[in-house]
Length: 79
Image (cartoon, rainbow, N blue to C red; front, top):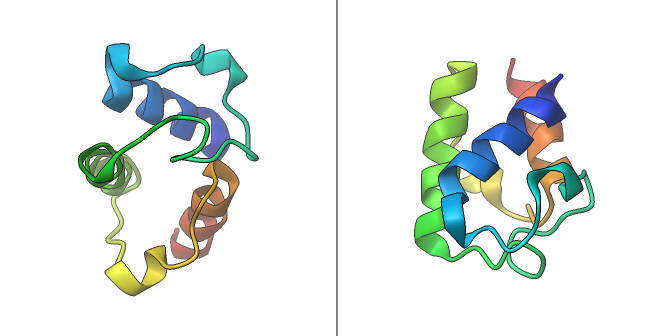
């Protein structure tokens, strides 16, 4: 459930810049290496995640996050 929602958020936030089909995004997909996301993309994705799940993610909670699966784990801890 969380992973599917994240895939949709990422695809929407990245829009036409997404270099892969949204169906190819999985828990091992890396934001920078695979999605070619920059800091603005990542900030947009984080804001959209916060809105979707009605949570607040602190900067220190983002440390060490590299993959979509990392984000899914953090979200599950916060909801």
